[in-house]
View 1 (cartoon, rainbow, N blue to C red):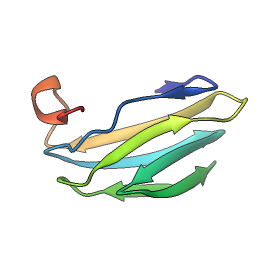
View 2: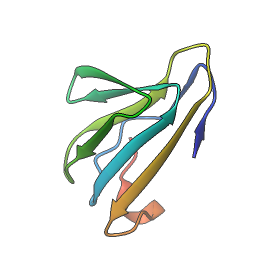
View 3: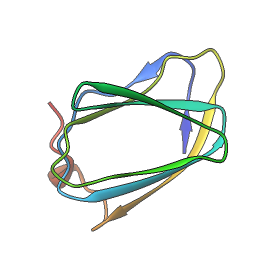
Length: 80
């Protein structure tokens, strides 16, 4: 997936676990009010039921891989 510079999503409380691996650039995670920045080669697991916002507030495109278990759907992402 690609997160363009200065991109963000609304907060969500998904009904799935999400694993993210950063291939290029950096991505910011706001996890229950705590900001975490991942860089190339780093990964994170966000547990289902966690309030999270994904963003790329940086000036460089971020390329990343996300795996959701169970699979992502508009019904189970629960965006605010």
